[in-house]
Structure formats: C-alpha cells, structure tokens
Image 1 (cartoon, helix red, strand yellow):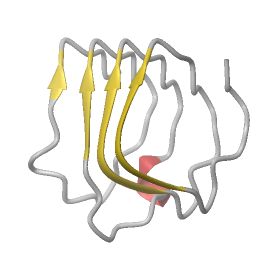
Image 2: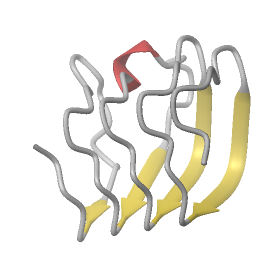
Image 3: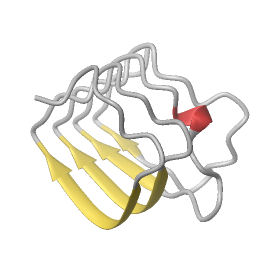
Image 4: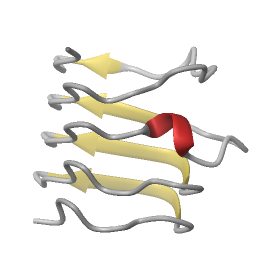
Length: 85
C-alpha cells in the first residue's frame, strides 16, 4: 500500500501496475508515459498536476473517485470498467 506518499517528480515509462492503492498520493510533476493501471484504487488523485509532456495512461477496473483530470487533453485515455465519481 502506497497511499498518502509522494510520487512527485518521478518518471514512469512503459509500466503496468496491478492491484494496489495509491489514494491521495502527491503527483506534482510526475511523468506518466504509456502507463497502465489494473485493478487499482486511486482515490482523490490530482492527475492535473502531472507533467504534461507525453502524458499517457489507461485504467482497467480501477476506482478513480474524486480524481481530477481538469484541463488535461487525454483523448486516448481508456477508463475500462472503472469508477469515476
């Protein structure tokens, strides 16, 4: 479990993450490029604070309640079987 930790300034490229809880983590200037989240709990995340350059992620069977994607241009992002409240 990694909830409430800081992932600020980290870079994730071509990764797949399975079965974890990243709720309320700090994503300031975090880079996600070709990242897949599968069966994840991602409550309250501010994806709008991520590094925008080549930003790409997809979600499968994830809980993304209260996550913010405000102002992001992510037309290729998939939210398959995921919850977004």
